[in-house]
Image (cartoon, rainbow, N blue to C red):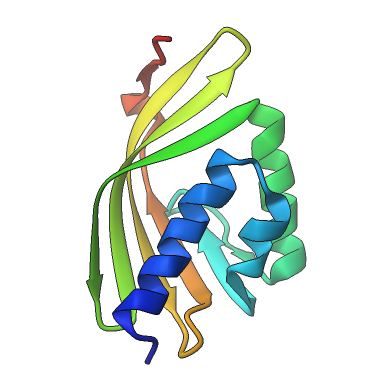
Length: 127
C-alpha cells in the first residue's frame, strides 16, 4: 500500500495538473489501466489513451478548470477530496461542488477516481 505522503503527492499533482492545464502531468499520475468515472453514473474512461481523450474533451468544454480543495482525507490506499470546481469559459463560467474518491496502487499511482458532482447544482462563476 502506498504511504499517505505518496497519496497526498498524487492528489496534489492532480490538482496542479488541472490548474496548469498540463495533460502530460495528469496522465503521469495514472496506472496504465487506471479508471476515471467523471461524474459517477457516466461511462468510465479506462487506460491512458481513454484518459487522454477525456482530458481533451473536457478542455473543449472549458478554457480552464481549476480545482480548489476544501479538504483532503487519506485512509488506507484512498483519498477523498472535497472541492470546488471552477470551470472558466470565456468571460464567465461555472462553479460546482464535488467530491473525488481516489484509489492509489502501491506506487502511489491512480488506479481509480470516482467524481461525484451534479450539473444541476452549478452556479455562475463570478470574477
